[in-house]
Length: 493
Image (cartoon, rainbow, N blue to C red):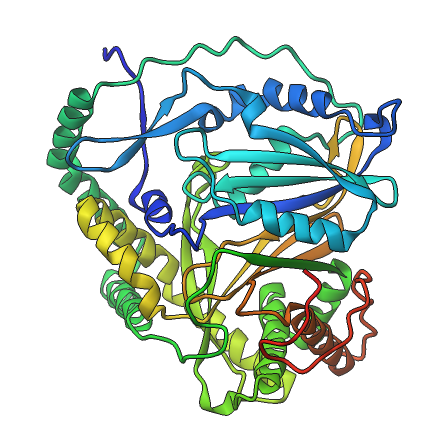
């Protein structure tokens, strides 16, 4: 029995560390808005200590939150070890807006907090408690490095840190005793042993991939085609657009909400999946946005990357990334929303039938063979030949209220990080009957982020007219006069 303990990062988890640059952080985040309720202090603030104590009491269920990274000598692959100097005061911060703080101010604060890199010498997460928000509300701004979680595991974290009932019971947590970390020599020896056995593990995954085929000859050909098709899209760069240029270190963050029931009625009326409807709304918004930037949408090949969970039932609740990706061509050259939806639905149906997500999982496993130096080289160059123009991620959240020590969470706005040459990212999360949109943008690439949100609203309204529905208005935003787009345009964040 070994005297030490550590956890390896998968090649996919490691890739999110390698993709991080001074101008491009790689943590996922969210801004959660709560009613103050029982967390109000006698002075009119928020009981930050109670939130800190409740989080500390849950950390035994999230071991990664008390682990930090160390590197294997020579090879350079990072591993997780327990942090013997873990201090929760570093990870949970308390601040305030100037009272009464507006949502516009909260958006600006969220952008500033999110654009700051996490310290790799410590566990890679932070929670900011923000009091002073108008309407008797407060916010939590949460940051977790993408090497730790994907969207689905992020929702699992919500269920650990919060409660589905107002009467949350905080139990005494078990004593945290850090496990001994391995020495550099021990890590290196273990890595050599792992490399010897790795081919057998990959062959096992390949066998599972093949064994799922009922009609071996037909399904084998289908699966090989899925790998070939996926690789073909991956190595084909997308069109250059005003959204795809070298980004800076600063961000704008904006948000709004839609009624989830209305979105589902759109889906039932027009066909396709809920995510197909979301992508159709994005298509209409991108088309309007590019026209406003004096671009001809009919001359562009505009593709989005849509993460797809490949998490098995056995992996539910586990941290780390269990995702693949679909690359979908948005039909921005078509003006008719019904045609846009039909073309998107056709693509997503083919992607489901082709099992490309499963094929990508196999290729990700094969990446375990790749030395760290080559992975780092690939990560440095990957963003210059991106096969997509935009990331759109849609994560289903709990459809019932969640509470933090009796304070009801009203809204949650997710935040997807940007890669270099990727000036805009769209993240959605459904929660308690609402579909919350979080729009993250490079500060200089998208000075017109608020007009883009208006483009989303217009595309949504147009779909509603086709379905003979009256879509609800998104949550009101501070007034912002629409100005000509370009470097001189104004924005709300």
